[in-house]
Image 1 (tube, chains in turn green, red):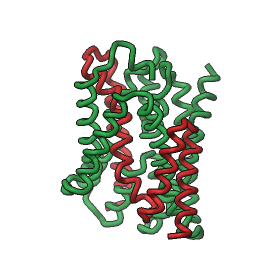
Image 2 (cartoon, chains in turn brown, yellow; image 1 turned 45 degrees about the vertical axis):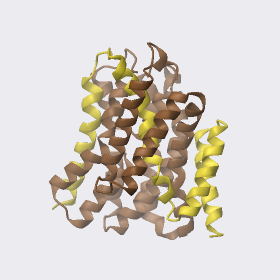
Image 3 (cartoon, helix red, strand yellow; image 1 turned 60 degrees about the horizontal axis):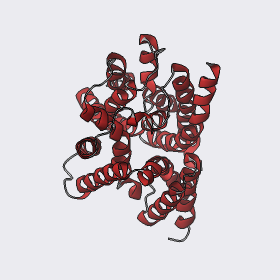
Image 4 (cartoon, helix red, strand yellow; image 1 turned 135 degrees about the horizontal axis):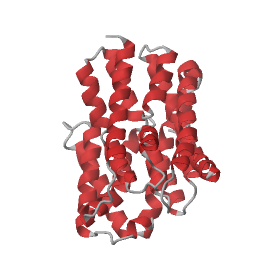
Length: 234
Length: 99
């Protein structure tokens, strides 16, 4: 049982390193927007999400309304509901109410990606290890960025902007190489996302991701339905 | 508006979005379409989040594009996540000195 926790922690290390650099950027941004260092760290500890936090800080800085805050967080973060639903199908029997309440806090893009790539069912301890290490990276990176970010050269902080996307690529490409079905879905999603970026610009970024992903996955499910058990092989 | 209220609302909404489907959805999904849909969702979400946003994440399209190319090549050869991610960033940094 203990080894599940250690395994989760080791799988969390690349996420932690990626988070360190991204949350570093968030820390810089939050302080620039006029927030105290403690507020930046608190936001990171409570939310554990990049896009939603960046949007939230923008609203706080602009003195926006609470309704605007709620709608923005809903739009940007609703993808987590899909991820949570997907992960809920992969949990082992030791997941009871308390474990579900606790682990749901840590569903992020990266944790979801790593967890759903596991060949076996997920245990609470594995998820706890994965989330804990990622959390440490996210919160400490925010603190460092907020406290010391402006001391680093801009060239370095700019280049760090690509770290998490690089990780996404490393997650998408290998299964796309092995499966034409996955490749097709990935290409459709990217294509629709490009349309939203350059042609249908009235749709916000959060909604654009949701629509692209839902449409591409629905197309995949219609064109190439998976067989019983096939989804456990990934 | 008090800062702490903003932060509480933000955290509350974000948690509920994750918690409600994860905690209260217990049954095994029977529909083949919906199971297929959930199988493809992770790849579709990451793809839509990455493209085209990755080209704007460093503040310079050229450094971002070279970083992306390096990431795709290394990922194609199944290198570990962190190697791909840091190589992309290192490439963007080095390219940045020349553009």
